[in-house]
Image 1 (cartoon, rainbow, N blue to C red):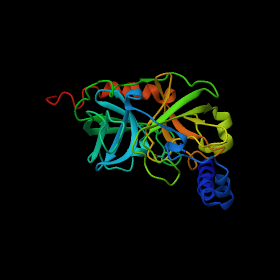
Image 2: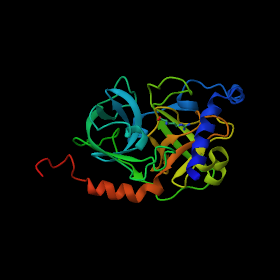
Image 3: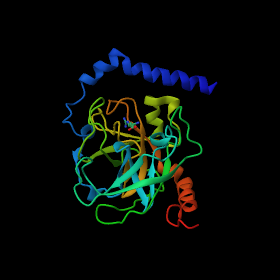
Length: 272
Ligand code: ARG
């Protein structure tokens, strides 16, 4: 029964994208200045956990460094791939085309998708990537700790990435940061109804205009220097009354810690 409801909802959201009335709403959005939706240029040294996940050399998603050989990203960034071949992780540069410093690049040895990940609604949208080798930490390359709980409604949180700067726009060459506010799930349900699960959290601003967008997926939503969310989905980008949706790190934290421990030595000790 609930499955049928979800299907209808998915269809409903898909249709609303093509709905001319919704399109008209966008005209009232603030003029965007061509940065992550509504964001500002930033420097990797302020967000040294941020990485660019590349497929055949092309930026595909964001992610966060958790250990010198482990990355946290979104399940939907890797679930369509047969394996980790052709995936590389680039750390240490603010610009995705022209390295701004000694950037580091490592191949991916394997990825592990959250066992409860559901493609239909992006529930448990979390994955861990184990690298072939180790990053050397410096001011532009650092791990981030996991948030233990969700901050309360309206708390400012920050999302970063090289994703598109408008809904149908282009990737940003310079890393963007944008400050958004926590939106309680009870309130976020008015936008997303049963598509929103308790493993998700929402963040946005009143009136829209600031959000993550395509290409930011898998990247970090940060609160208090901890990883609070993983960029996951949303209806369009930065639309009024449609906050961005994130996998909630406090709700997948135990799985991350367990999986990271189990894979601590993969890619490090080759003779085992
Ligand atoms: N799914 C998108 C990606 O793969 C991220 C979408 C985030 N959307 C949003 N409105 N916050 O990059």
